[in-house]
Length: 258
Image (cartoon, rainbow, N blue to C red):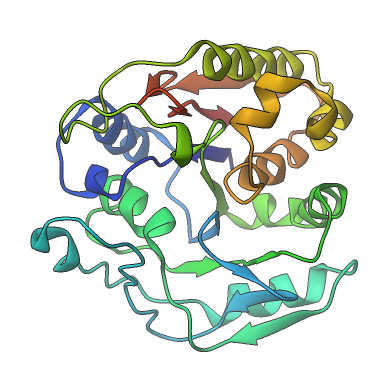
């Protein structure tokens, strides 16, 4: 099964028809049909590592200030105790506990609503342990590789460049295609390091200079990309889509590895 990193951007992409949500829709049609989905979202940070293990995960509207229409969206996918149990078994580098509370956050459902609009694929989320260093997350992600042979689609959902404090908005148009110089520079550097397989430098992103420090002021939107890169096998290719900056200080850059 391929693996996927998605720059999810604004939650409005769940209900707006635009080039980003359109690519998600086409991706859902082109990928092999999965038996289950594992999503690592920027929006579920915990102390320790948790995996969602409920039968019917709730749709979490973990945002504010958006139209009421968005708060009415539901994504009624089932969970998968089978997948949660397998994840708990195969991860050896950390203790993994079952979670019965979280559900599906917008980093997960806003993308899946476009890819699988019928919500007919079971979905499990894996949390990001905020006590763990980036290298630990990368090693943990490597332990998930066997899921690819079990027809599980693994999705990391964040943003390669994500600095909400530096956004440049024109009215309410969050998706206006515009990038500040440092955001474009950091995004291109990340892509070059990915192309050259220099994952160690991506793990140690704090050493990559001022533009990257601005691009990754906090790590939660960056880590899902490391999870997906950790799953790349020799000979596989990285194919980009939605490779554009928006609102000055974010990039929607996404990729499939297969």
